[in-house]
Length: 303
Image (spheres, one colour):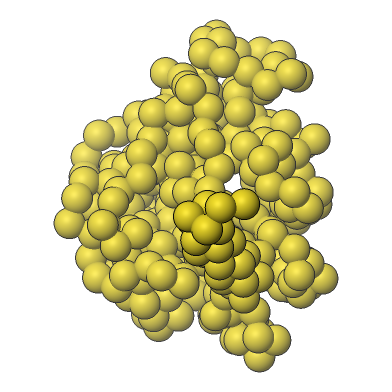
């Protein structure tokens, strides 16, 4: 090898070593999505939520994130997790079933499901572990279970045991890349039963905040918090005892991203719930499907 070639190759080799060292030091990517159903911005602001507040303000947050229409549960959580609206994924109402729906998705995986973030990560991240915790039965219907390592359903709107199990799953897989979705419907159910902004609804948010705080405290004690990215979000707000319309209290929800390298402060750019999955894909440095319409807001990554 001539001297000029050696001088060129050596710096490149050093850069490669530095890059590999940085990756090893950073450890595997871990993302936890904390999902509370039916949280309006005014509801969150009225409730006493020190743990949610601290989580949101320690990263980038929005109090004006727009949901997809209709402003109901299944289309919106599907949109969070597929980077697309109902026009692409075809989940247009809460009664959607894999074998009973009107609008077909614009693309599918090998088993007929619209590609979710779980599928994207499983296909591209070696050794990735995924989990889906929920307490509303229909929520999982649009997702291919083949991309989920652990699925846990808690009956009767219970959620505390799911929070406890979520921590165990994170701890068991501390050395692996991980994406965990942790959902509860009890906040939404209190809105329907007693009214959005009722004392019962506000109390349900505060109760969820306690469990979120307990999960985060256990992660800190186990040395698992600092290396984790967290998304906190909802799917719609409400008015009276319902939702599904286009009023701001139904169509705007809180959303935040917290974790290593994420700047602090309120997001200035418009944000939509379809952006959640592309943001998660970006954290794992994964390519996204052609049908996805969500985007990554540059300021989330300091640009």
